[in-house]
Image 1 (cartoon, rainbow, N blue to C red):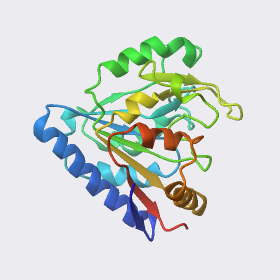
Image 2 (image 1 turned 90 degrees about the vertical axis):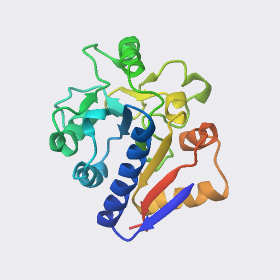
Image 3 (image 1 turned 120 degrees about the horizontal axis):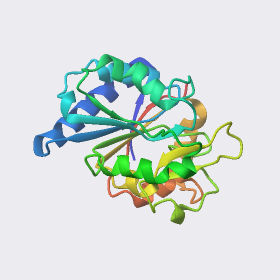
Image 4 (image 1 turned 135 degrees about the vertical axis):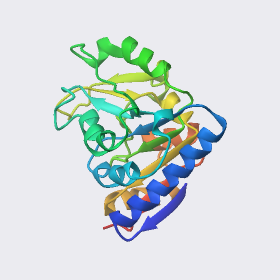
Length: 226
């Protein structure tokens, strides 16, 4: 992992935006289209607006999500709602967005349709941005899952034991094949988790599964533990 530590979220956000622009421009220099994957959570509320201010040929970039809660897309808990509020609403109307939520009652019944949507994206994913849970989860891939069962489709349905709603997540294989992967991490506990993982990778953590399967090194943007 290539770790970049910043004193505050404002400096992190600008550095992330600069990196994302350079990465997407590099892809578009040799491909007609690019795909940007963004996560949910609280931190994207800070760095997605910084990216939205950047000049890019957004009509050549498709935006999608790393995962989604199975709630209405207008719900405050929806990652699609977050992405549209903090990124898409600031971009040209020609920017394409592909959501993961369908009209099915649950994500388990929606896998074929969601997989079909993802299969139409410009693949491999150009830039995948992920958060990191304090338990080592990424997207909606959690410890305790069987990593060998997470790559059959482009997506996987999950019913987390302590979460209020089921979820759909990009598959481990699709994430691992990304041309560039960025982790954005804030908070002391996550900072320490990265320290421990660098010294001795825990094979039970989804972030470690992804590191081991990815052909690219991760770029990490993190605050200094505050």
